[in-house]
Length: 205
Image (cartoon, rainbow, N blue to C red; front, side, top):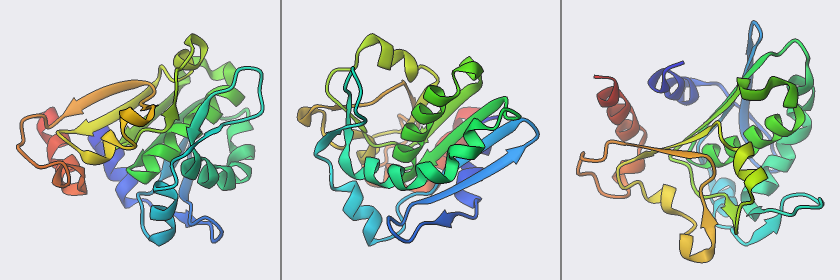
């Protein structure tokens, strides 16, 4: 699926919102493909979680890794709702995508899918449009490998993709694709939906 088509799908989806965390997500199955989509920030609760960025261990495990606490809290509330769909053996391909706040959730959902469906191998792909930094600290080789099919899409100087600051120990996971590098938009305008749409359309021209 082309990035522009996928981004439009993310923007146009009808989302389920969980009252306790305001988490907004959508699951769509088309044949053997499961689409897992996550919405941008749409209220005060989302922004509260966005700004709650002290690092926290992701799970109790032998090899600890750390993530943004607010994003982890939101994703934890979603996990029980996606478990059955992800583990369904009729699903042979998974595409996870989100924008802004939703891109951070998409990254955690992507990792969840890779961890719980190792049988799918490279048939799990993740896309984070305007994705903030989610991972804190050094990523070991095994963790880096886990994110090798996750793509962070950054439009120009998009401010959100530089937060939380690298100075605080945060980093992107997966691969970074820069679009709209020469559009001249400032760091705030570069994060807007219309800027991403224009940059993606330009990339296809």
